[in-house]
Length: 396
Image (cartoon, rainbow, N blue to C red):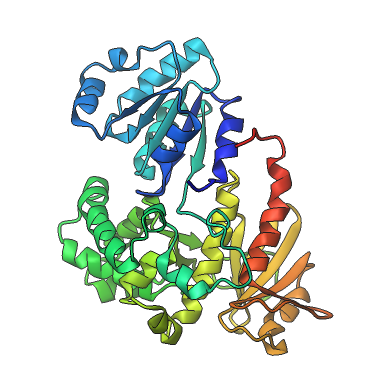
């Protein structure tokens, strides 16, 4: 059993909202977490055909209860949302319905129609390294990048090469067919691999469409599907009143580096260590872990990148209120002053709270203008910074 950081936030918000909605990718642990946190509640899964038929044919009877209820894969019975709205408006009882689902687009569409203002919305992503107790300075990040954060490989020690083929096949057969009209699964599989090959790069939809062999509009639709099913996320560019021309396209990253490695054909740590995309995948690893650190605290990740047309770039900017932290991410383990040249450049344009050069090792060096730090120590610092925001949450 892994302690999921988001558990505290669920219990805290359940004291304030009548409905809690937990979304996230398939097999991220949503069902297990809700049943563990709320073991005394009635649990109903719409994956079960009989239960789903009951919900579809008699929604009033399905929801007739005097006790709080967990409803899993709620998007499979969309009519329930309107009935839930009527119940919570009448009862006004905090923590009465707990809804979960893997198809974020369908969930958000129904919530905006029926439950806006009545539900707290949280996202459970794959396990973070903090939740796996892997934030120690001796941990080999290559192994972690390759294995990823989905709970099942860790629970029963499944090798990535055994887990990810089944995960992708299930994703293609279930989520993709339900979310969009993909008529050519083979071409969509090629699209997935092309996205993995563009990890850490600016999104050029026209080039991606050309390489995939589909239209621009199709690529835009497919990228939206990858986002709503929590396969990828886009890192937006940071814009301020700088005089220099800035890049305006978002960059593409995967929520789970294990999946990205599988799609790239990387099967062993030795292959990853020598791969041409090792640097991009390590950057993805640090960014996705940072994303999870915020998301699992119930905070929209305030993450950006910055690049101008002169070639100056910052891999990650963290904007907490008025404070701006700049981070360069380097897959090497040995600090050098050259690694922080863009941070020094950027600091002349705008005040920074902190500047980090995050490396793949454990070397920590405080220099006059730069802070060199290993990835594990960086994530520990970030977690400690956010820990104060969770001080009012119940024990978990």
